[in-house]
Length: 342
View 1 (tube, one colour):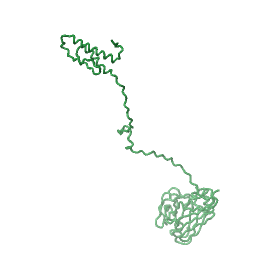
View 2 (cartoon, helix red, strand yellow):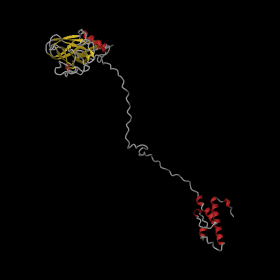
View 3 (tube, one colour):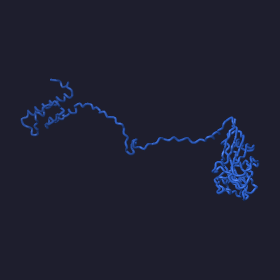
View 4 (cartoon, helix red, strand yellow):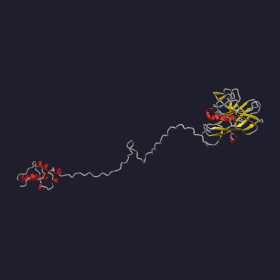
């Protein structure tokens, strides 16, 4: 008889089932009187099956119940092959469009412009050096940087900062007119330059009488050009605006002249007789050169010139073109010749 101890666990359980079945058959055959509680079992149903996995207990006999339960165990004993995880394809992550979750797909998002670099704060720049040719005499021609007319008045209420004309002389009402003009010397002539000659040109655009002298004097105080603009022939001026020079004010409304009519040197820098309409040039003099040389050496002292006509003869007043004159040929001009520094 073979030893059960050498059988593998599934083999031992199969033999046990077979023995149990034989015992049940023997018990049924040995009883002459049928048990009213026993349900006949077909012999084929108790024949040991080579495949215990499909064995189902069919007998309701008391002795078979515990063994039938044991026979049902083989299904759990059938070795289950180890599960092999199926490869999961790698799918690129797709951004979700759930509100408040994840990020918005690039195709539907509003493009964000790249940050614009903040420019550095502006820094003060030095005034560019004046261009000149070394080793030779240089010539520059300048237009006026500001001009105005002083209208004689006790109150100093009138001016003509933005008018097209300047006035000198004495009107038919015995009222004095004086013209102020200034040029930006430091912006055209380099520091350290030596002034060789100076020529001032003014144009007469209206006169009532013939030849009268017009003298040029260096102004000694700052003065203003506001937005006043006289109408008609401009001989009476217009109400002074803030910043205007008047007969009593160097700069309205707060700064007054030391003496009504303007602050200037009594020394004449240049003089010539003016007759009718046309351009007139005050030729270079030692004093004109000295004036401009002083402004090159000390730009803060440049207050320009004041032009004074005949203030004795009635109706000697003459109108000159201002820097706002519509005709460029009638505007004040200054020609300077200088030797560069060094």
